[in-house]
Length: 478
Image (tube, rainbow, N blue to C red; front, side, top):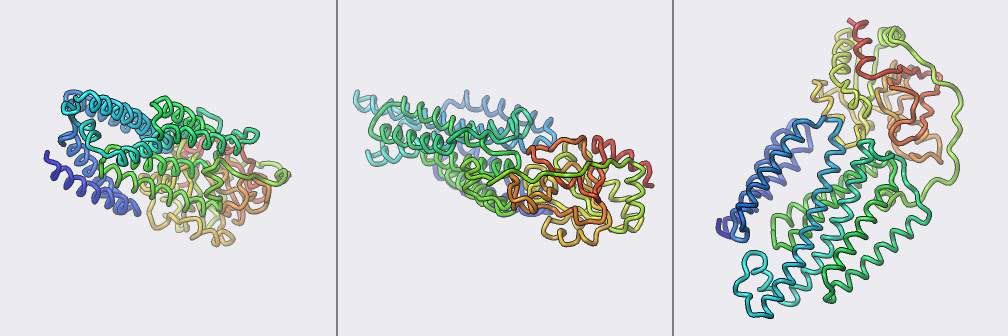
């Protein structure tokens, strides 16, 4: 494919990516938007591997086939509940690719310099031939791009691996708070900048390797220091990092499509992270720097006891209720109880009761995750409401049912200034006349924060696996 056709293909692919992002903003156009992205990526890959700057197709094509097969296999077996950690894992691949490409670019530059010195530069091909035509100023700029790509890529790689571990339960979701952690981070950035200056002044690849190791340690520490309550923001922020890493790769390789798509992903991820921070009343800079600051004293002591309720009690409460609000959380997704809650909703509405869903912006550990689950279970769109749309209705709600949620319904966010989630907007279920909490046990949930809701006088605990509990309840609600 000629350079002109490659450029035209990149423009079309960029437009498709933009249409894909725009279409994902609502449920009706989301499926079409996904196809825009698929077609755009297929076109981008085809244009790239058939372009004049790519050789060794005997190696490239089999690797694409193997990667596609592995990706298809993973996508086929992953559960919707595993989507947050899958997204984090995929971000790590982008970061690692940026690191490797940065190393390769530096090695290629050294190879080109040797070829020019020995008079064999006329034998250079592909990326090396392009490098041979660059001016000293352009090569200096490329060194900056390589440094940024390696640094951002390494932070993204290790940070995403930690995020994957926390989201999948392989690592403790609690924040790891080391003494003087912010000073450690600042020292790491300072040393990386010093190494960058040394690299810009002609030092070898050893400086890049040290930068990658240092940035990797920094990424690990930053995300380890962030607690489970803020992990949805972290996943979105890592998405942004991966985009900027891809953009840096694009500048290094002179690939316009990588620059455009990297900028799209980087900017959209940063905007989403900022929106989520506002929705959770979190400080954007504080979250991305590993939780800068903290509470000023101990959390309030919780009094009372958790009172259990059985299936008969829940059925009776629902039979007496006219208005019901259901608040789903990540526990519902883990138990795969969305089908059961959809059937319960259908039966209650058939009895003339008003049933609605209240969705927190980060329910399910990713924005929109819970909405997708409910849509798959055929829950009508028009009864699925955002937190801000329904919070004021709880005082007139007969029964609020919380299923597998903890932090998003925690009154400590409003009542305890020393709570780790103080100030975070939450769904105010405790204002309903009766609250039923479906929960596996008496644990504190993903973030490890105790919830006073479970001890309030109008709250009853419906213990057990969410799906099994709901299925038992369905037997009594015809």
